[in-house]
Image 1: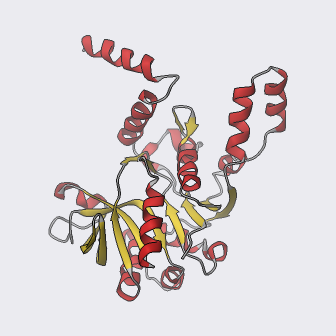
Image 2: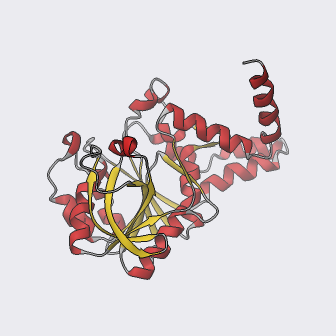
Image 3: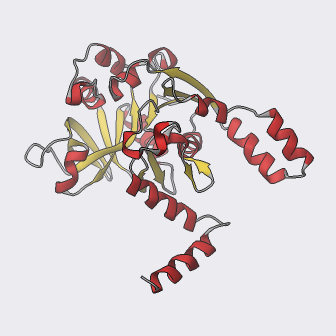
Amino acid sequence: MKVRKAVIPAAGLGTRMLPATKTVPKEMLPLVDKPVIQYIIEEAVAAGIEDILIVTNRAKSAMDDYFDYYPELETRLNQAGKEKELCEVRRAADLANIFYVRQKETRGLGHAIWRAKRFVGDEPFAVLLGDDIMKASVPVTRQLIDAAEKYSASAVGVQYVATEAISKYSSVKVSPLEGRVFQVSDMNEKPTPEQMLSNYAILGRYVLTPEIFDILENLSPGYGGEIQLTDGLKQLCRTNPMVAVDFEGRRYDTGNLNGFLEATIDFALGHPQTGDWLRRFILDKAKHL
């Protein structure tokens, strides 16, 4: 079982980040000096992924343009002797083999994943949600791939969340397997504290086997009247092996303003061009609050 392909669902309307996302895809909002989606693609590449499919909609052609060559800009940078900037512009276009398909109807995450069926074929594949940025010494997608390959199973990335926050996520029913890896037997979408199966919640990373596509194709709408990926995974884990990986790393939800600002500050503090300046700025600002 070798994972070579990844799917990035990026067809959402970005309603949690309005008005900025009215005309700019939320995945293209700048996180320090790169758009959010570039961090996600870089994680996939670092995990060994070769081919990436981005599921978009009609308003998100900016992503296609960004990961393409821009001869006029590159010529201008070359003439100006801006070799560093030229290298960065070209690097974005050369990160991976990137393909696109549109989700022509807004029918939920499960439907967006189903749109990748022809791209994936009969192979296992990774899913990286377009809102979730991971900061980890070992790419979170790589952590999931290692577990999926070891156990010949689908894998979901989880972390422990507080009971009062579980209704924002998918809760999974788990039993110990090995270290930070658990066996998954059930899950539910956005449960109340009374309905939750555990405090382990799925957080934006998956490795799935192609059996998920037949399930999603025949799935009835669930929470919010949409085709929910969690409902498909709930069926999948009852007939096929599935593990949960309590991954090591920090997850940022850049699809909401607070999460986006947290990520911006943390990544800017770690950036060689902005880290020292921002640290001084924050300390000076705190003195006057």
